[in-house]
Structure formats: structure tokens, C-alpha cells
Length: 225
Length: 184
Image (cartoon, rainbow over all chains, first blue to last red; front, side):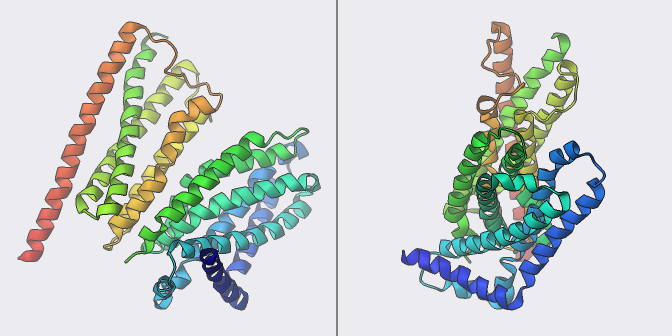
């Protein structure tokens, strides 16, 4: 319990920093809205059937690209003035830092996704996706969790490289394809008559657990000096 | 299937080598994190490079065979997708190694080497988990074909061992030269 509270403190600290600067969350939201808008310009003339096929893809491209921006920043603030070492001096296992950061990224991404979803529904006139809201929420939660759990770990790695933000997508996209494929597939299932998302949810859950546990286990080796 | 079937022996053996190489990457990475001995980092690097080459060969030969028997170079079949993703992940592993310059290089690449391994079992098992058009090895092979396959897999494994030996030797020589240069 104490451990979880410490992990939560890391998240709380990041949340306060973010609330004061609003740097990251604003950029993420504006970026994801831009992706939706540009896709709307590009595909706006298509028939409704064609839009049904590409819309889930557009939605997740917006989520993932904007999420990448946020995840990429999550350890940069800690590099400044060696703050990470300050965090590590706290008397708790370092994986608590990882868990706190993951909760933070998950939280920021979910806010961004919520706002993007509203804009997306309005611009693409896609109200039918909201009729399956409980299922959509499950997909969003599981998909985002899988994405941020491995993303946070890889962000801690890529922050040490010279090319930082450039490298993160190259590392993160291939690794998270097992998460991205099921979420896109199951989101497109939602707008069919009888959605069958259970097989995809199973794969998602399995990968979430694997990525989260594995990342929490090896995070210590990333930050040790 | 005629002559096009013969590519099978290269294809399966290369895939086997890729799986073997990536397994060695994961094992070396874990041992490196435990022991911090530099040789394990060299093993991981050498094995990853060989694995990327052999999985590229697998993809190319598979594509050639697909053109002959499915009449298309590529299709988004689960087996093909997971194999391509596996190749991409290890290609990005090599990119990561290139862009890390500091003393952290070995440690951070070892961490990614472990994460990367998540793609290997799913590629191997993909033909059992999902319905796929990729031929399954479990269907009965004729005895001569089985013999040829075993022979070529053995030959490819020996090739892997030889390449691995050469590659680690290059890295070790590099280090020796570096040491000589700095001690002068």
C-alpha cells in the first residue's frame, strides 16, 4: 500500500507541474485535433461506407501520434538538473517511479482521447460509435494502457540518446503493433451490426499484462547509474 | 508445386536461424543485466545483426514463394504480419544501438533486447492462434522432404554459429585496438 502511495506521489507531482505549465496536454490535444481535421480534409469527399472503413484508423492515428508527443516528454523534465536522481533517492523501489509515470501518461492520454473523440464525432458525423460507449471505453482503456506501459519504459531509454524524440517512434511503434492492431480492429467492429470484440480484447489484455509487468521489472536497469 | 517448392528449405531454415538468433539476444541481454560483463553485450549485438539478416531472408524468400503459389507478393496474413513486425523491432534495436554513445549503451540496449523478444513467441505461435493461409509445418511431409529439411536446418545452424563466431571476433578485436590506442 505504501508502495502504491509513493507511486501515486510521483504521478501527483507530474500532475501539479502539468497543471501549472499546461505545456504537454495542450500540445497533445491540439495535435490530435489537427490530425482529425487534416484527415477530414483528405477523406471528406468519400462515401459513408468508405468513411466507416477508415474512421477507426483515423481516430487511432490521432491518439497514437499525439500520445507519442506526451510520452516522449515524460522523462525530459527529469533530465533537467538531474531531477531523476532526486526521485531515485526516495526510499522506495525505483519501479514506483515507472508506475507513477505510467499512471501520469495514461491520465493525460485519456483526457486527450476524450476531447479528440468529441471533435471526431462532430467532424466525421460519427455519432453511431457513441451508441456502443461501454465497449468503446474498454477498448480505449486497454489500448491506451498497453501503449503507455511500454511507451514510458522506452521513453526512459530514448531520453538518453542524442536523437531523443526522433528515436522514440522508431522504437515504440513496432513494439506496440500487437496492441495497435487489436484496438483498430475492435473499434471497426463496433460500428458493424453485431460487434464481436472478445477475441481482440483477449489479445489486448494479454499484451497489457506482459508489457506492464515486464516494463516494471526491468525499469530499474534503465535508470541505475 | 514444382520447382517453387524448393525455396521452402531456405525459407524454413532462415526462419529457424532468426528465431534462434533472437533467443540468443534475449538470453545475452538478461545475463548482461545480471553480470554487467561486456562480452554478453557483444553476443547480443552479433546475434541481433545475424537475426535481422536471416529474418530479412525469410521475408524475401517467403514473398517469392507467395508470388508463385498465392499469386501475390504480400498479403496481411497473421504470420506475415507478425514476422514483418519482428523484423522491424530488431531493425530498430540496431538503430537504438547506433544512437547510444555513452557508457549506458550496453545496459539500455539490453533492456530493449528483452522487450523486443515479446515479438518472437507471437510470430512463432501465430499459425496456431489465428486462422492463416500460411502452410503449417505439422502437415505431413514426405520422408525425403523431411530429411532434406533437417539437413538444411542443421547446415543453417552451423552457418549461424560460424557467423556468430566471426562477428564476436570482430567486436573483440575492435575493443582490443581501442584499448591499445588509449594506453599508448
